[in-house]
Length: 422
Image (cartoon, rainbow, N blue to C red; front, top):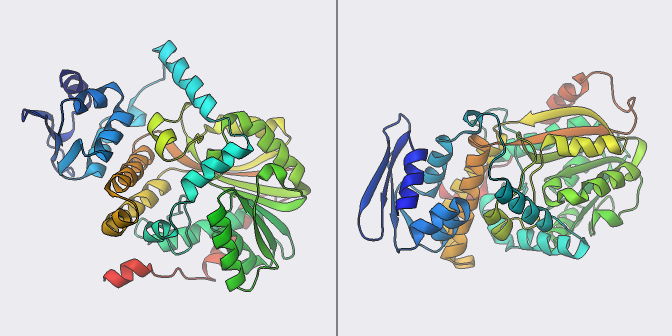
């Protein structure tokens, strides 16, 4: 316990944390902080403290999943947020090289994990997205948007924020009826169906998770638009263009940096000469880094959240003009918070679908991600790319006008599970 004790005394200065070791001895850290309730944690076996101190992310995650770390007052979200609150990204100062050998080893492991050839990309997608359909129904919005929502007001429902996200993206595409649109990493088809519904465009969505594609095609058939909105189980590297517009939402995080040059070259070739591409992705405000081992192992194998410099550099090399960049700073934190509490509300059903360990894993994932987007160095980027500088109007005004028009066309549905509970 001495190593974990030393780490926590250095870390926790604000907020109260009590840790009870396996032998019953209590350790207290921090001090009362307005807005933060005291948190109490119990370690159930001799090795838990060392596992957490040796590798906090993996050690704490696995200890919580296995019931070796039990939060007795508060919950795991409170604990993770408190840890991040005590070490916000903004307070960490200028980055300086340290532990170069360890950093190099981590970087190498991260790079190897990001080598996503086609069969590995499909396997990784299936790991993440081929979970039981019911799981996603339990914590996502009705449209199954599994990416950062756009909160015009923090009091908005998740349904409204996800609808506003689609309007926000669509407004930046400058769409016209009859255009041909490619949605790379189309998820469950919500954005593709939205674009067709409001612009009368033809959309091809591609993804690597079979159940996503099956579900998206079911939705298109049910809406009577299967001849105009088509979803295919296909790697983007096999798509044949051209397309007037390309969207990719939550895709770049799954590519892996070794594949950035090929991705941007392919998108350049797929775009019509006057084409527009809009990328919406998680991003880091720090220089390039690595994906932590726990996330790679349990949630997003092969995944990596890029720095803006990494994606802009490849656009430059492939003659794609970066026409607009927006950084969404808190939107994903609000989204993840809502997903977390919907997950909690569905605890019993998720345990029945999987088991208690899976439920705890999902809690740890959502809480850790929320903390990273609240206090850590994570944000979301929306980047608009052009092949020709005259492809869109000369000012950004068209985006605001169009977004306001779209917001007046559609109201977000109520969340059926919440409505039933109330």
